[in-house]
Image 1 (cartoon, rainbow, N blue to C red):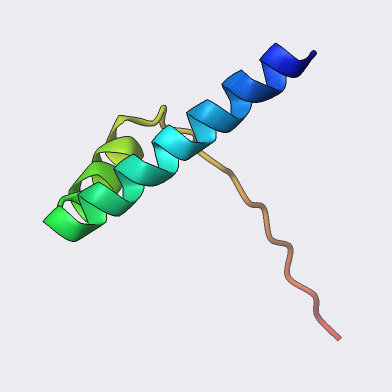
Image 2 (cartoon, helix red, strand yellow; image 1 turned 180 degrees about the vertical axis):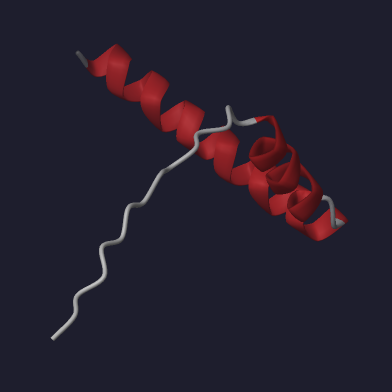
Length: 53
């Protein structure tokens, strides 16, 4: 159990370090955009009905 928590904390600290490093270098927004661009496209359909009085 202690090993699992250690791995989780290590991964979080690595992620945090990389986020800070990328932000200082100035490529964090580029990486965020690439995540957005590579996400699967999901189309949401909204139906509206007119309410008349």
